[in-house]
Length: 129
Image 1: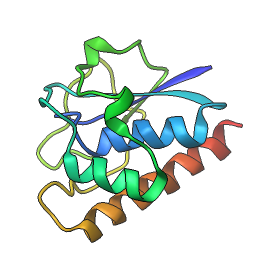
Image 2: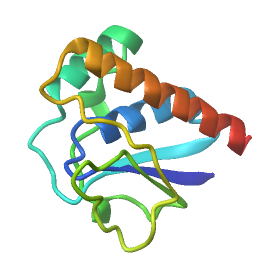
Image 3: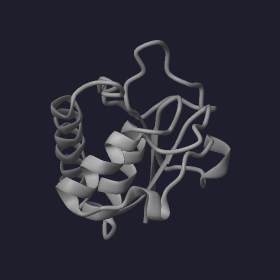
Image 4: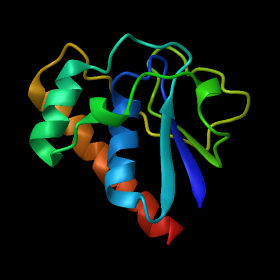
Protein backbone atom coordinates (compact mmCIF):
# COMPACT_ATOMS: atom_id res chain seq x y z
CA UNK A 1 0.00 0.00 0.00
CA UNK A 2 1.32 3.45 -0.89
CA UNK A 3 2.42 5.84 1.85
CA UNK A 4 1.16 9.42 1.50
CA UNK A 5 2.80 12.19 3.53
CA UNK A 6 1.05 15.51 4.09
CA UNK A 7 3.70 18.13 4.77
CA UNK A 8 3.68 21.67 6.14
CA UNK A 9 6.16 23.65 8.17
CA UNK A 10 4.83 23.14 11.72
CA UNK A 11 2.79 19.94 11.35
CA UNK A 12 0.13 21.27 13.69
CA UNK A 13 -2.98 22.04 11.62
CA UNK A 14 -3.59 21.40 7.90
CA UNK A 15 -1.25 18.42 7.58
CA UNK A 16 -2.68 16.91 10.78
CA UNK A 17 -6.23 17.31 9.42
CA UNK A 18 -5.14 15.66 6.14
CA UNK A 19 -3.56 12.74 8.03
CA UNK A 20 -6.71 12.26 10.11
CA UNK A 21 -9.05 12.46 7.11
CA UNK A 22 -6.77 10.20 5.08
CA UNK A 23 -6.95 7.57 7.83
CA UNK A 24 -10.71 8.12 8.16
CA UNK A 25 -11.64 7.90 4.47
CA UNK A 26 -8.76 6.12 2.74
CA UNK A 27 -7.18 3.59 5.10
CA UNK A 28 -8.05 0.83 2.62
CA UNK A 29 -6.38 2.72 -0.27
CA UNK A 30 -3.24 4.37 1.20
CA UNK A 31 -1.41 4.93 4.49
CA UNK A 32 -1.55 8.53 5.73
CA UNK A 33 1.21 10.39 7.56
CA UNK A 34 1.88 14.03 8.35
CA UNK A 35 5.08 15.85 9.19
CA UNK A 36 6.86 19.19 9.14
CA UNK A 37 10.30 20.77 9.27
CA UNK A 38 9.49 22.09 12.75
CA UNK A 39 7.20 20.78 15.46
CA UNK A 40 4.72 22.38 17.83
CA UNK A 41 4.07 21.23 21.41
CA UNK A 42 0.49 20.33 20.47
CA UNK A 43 -1.84 20.08 17.49
CA UNK A 44 -3.87 23.24 16.77
CA UNK A 45 -6.68 23.13 19.35
CA UNK A 46 -9.25 24.71 17.03
CA UNK A 47 -8.55 22.01 14.45
CA UNK A 48 -8.82 19.32 17.15
CA UNK A 49 -12.17 20.69 18.37
CA UNK A 50 -13.70 21.14 14.91
CA UNK A 51 -12.55 17.70 13.68
CA UNK A 52 -14.25 16.17 16.75
CA UNK A 53 -17.43 18.12 15.99
CA UNK A 54 -17.47 17.33 12.26
CA UNK A 55 -16.25 13.71 12.17
CA UNK A 56 -15.96 12.45 15.74
CA UNK A 57 -12.19 12.14 15.17
CA UNK A 58 -9.89 12.81 18.14
CA UNK A 59 -6.65 13.85 16.44
CA UNK A 60 -4.80 14.01 19.75
CA UNK A 61 -5.53 10.36 20.50
CA UNK A 62 -3.13 8.97 17.86
CA UNK A 63 -1.42 12.00 16.35
CA UNK A 64 1.28 14.45 17.41
CA UNK A 65 3.50 17.01 15.71
CA UNK A 66 6.43 15.23 14.05
CA UNK A 67 9.38 15.89 11.78
CA UNK A 68 9.80 14.49 8.27
CA UNK A 69 12.58 12.25 9.61
CA UNK A 70 10.06 10.70 12.06
CA UNK A 71 7.81 9.14 9.39
CA UNK A 72 8.43 6.35 6.84
CA UNK A 73 9.74 7.32 3.40
CA UNK A 74 6.60 8.39 1.50
CA UNK A 75 5.61 7.24 -1.98
CA UNK A 76 3.64 10.47 -2.41
CA UNK A 77 4.48 13.78 -0.70
CA UNK A 78 1.90 16.55 -0.68
CA UNK A 79 2.50 20.11 0.44
CA UNK A 80 -0.43 21.72 2.20
CA UNK A 81 0.48 25.09 0.72
CA UNK A 82 3.23 27.14 2.20
CA UNK A 83 2.52 30.84 2.13
CA UNK A 84 6.13 31.70 2.90
CA UNK A 85 8.09 28.85 1.33
CA UNK A 86 7.63 25.11 1.35
CA UNK A 87 9.98 23.04 3.48
CA UNK A 88 12.66 21.03 1.70
CA UNK A 89 12.01 17.33 2.23
CA UNK A 90 14.87 15.88 0.21
CA UNK A 91 12.84 15.52 -3.00
CA UNK A 92 10.22 17.43 -4.97
CA UNK A 93 6.61 17.44 -3.81
CA UNK A 94 4.17 15.38 -5.88
CA UNK A 95 1.45 17.99 -5.38
CA UNK A 96 0.87 21.32 -3.62
CA UNK A 97 -2.68 21.73 -2.37
CA UNK A 98 -2.24 25.49 -1.84
CA UNK A 99 -4.44 25.65 1.27
CA UNK A 100 -4.53 28.77 3.43
CA UNK A 101 -3.54 28.24 7.06
CA UNK A 102 -6.67 28.85 9.17
CA UNK A 103 -4.70 29.25 12.41
CA UNK A 104 -6.00 32.22 14.38
CA UNK A 105 -9.01 32.61 12.11
CA UNK A 106 -12.73 31.85 12.52
CA UNK A 107 -14.37 28.43 12.77
CA UNK A 108 -15.82 29.09 9.31
CA UNK A 109 -12.27 29.43 7.93
CA UNK A 110 -11.29 26.13 9.56
CA UNK A 111 -14.38 24.38 8.21
CA UNK A 112 -13.68 25.70 4.69
CA UNK A 113 -10.12 24.32 4.76
CA UNK A 114 -11.24 21.00 6.31
CA UNK A 115 -13.88 20.61 3.58
CA UNK A 116 -11.24 21.33 0.90
CA UNK A 117 -8.97 18.67 2.42
CA UNK A 118 -11.80 16.14 2.52
CA UNK A 119 -12.56 16.76 -1.16
CA UNK A 120 -8.89 16.40 -2.12
CA UNK A 121 -8.56 13.16 -0.10
CA UNK A 122 -11.63 11.73 -1.84
CA UNK A 123 -10.21 12.75 -5.24
CA UNK A 124 -6.97 10.92 -4.35
CA UNK A 125 -8.97 7.81 -3.43
CA UNK A 126 -10.72 7.87 -6.82
CA UNK A 127 -7.39 8.26 -8.66
CA UNK A 128 -5.64 5.50 -6.71
CA UNK A 129 -8.33 2.82 -6.83
